[in-house]
Image 1 (cartoon, rainbow, N blue to C red):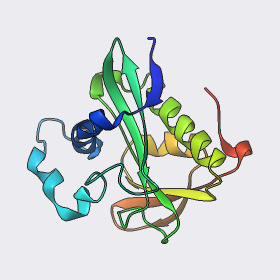
Image 2 (spheres, rainbow, N blue to C red; image 1 turned 180 degrees about the vertical axis):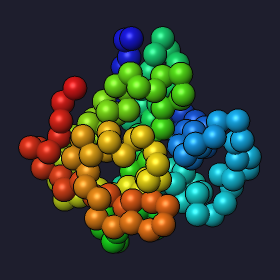
Image 3 (cartoon, helix red, strand yellow; image 1 turned 180 degrees about the horizontal axis):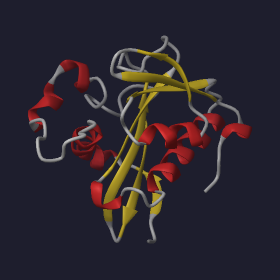
Image 4 (cartoon, rainbow, N blue to C red; image 1 turned 135 degrees about the vertical axis):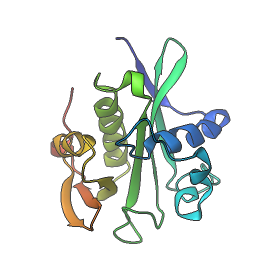
Length: 165
């Protein structure tokens, strides 16, 4: 499948609501959480007023003029927050486009971009049962902490840690 990775345009930022909802790990696809869950303050920190903070960056994957995935970072106090200087990743690819390398390509694009901007590290949180844990490890994230449900992972940024497809 042919896809393009590009920066998400400000006019497209409202799509982050769809991607935030999609990013919520759902082991049981027949019993989905209501979309209204993204209105919770602990989830709104990932998208509210996106583009207005200095550390807001987003790339998207496009297939046949349709945005099918997004990766974005912010310096927030989110689930994967490790300190006040580290940006936190969020990533989502629509179900029908998963397991095609798009998520890895999005992650690598953002890691390369953060590297060029001289960020020293990035973090994320992921449910322990989420198959994406392996993808995050493949692109250089390491588990540094955990709670009952999630791993907290960090990527030490330098050009040698970015894996190309």
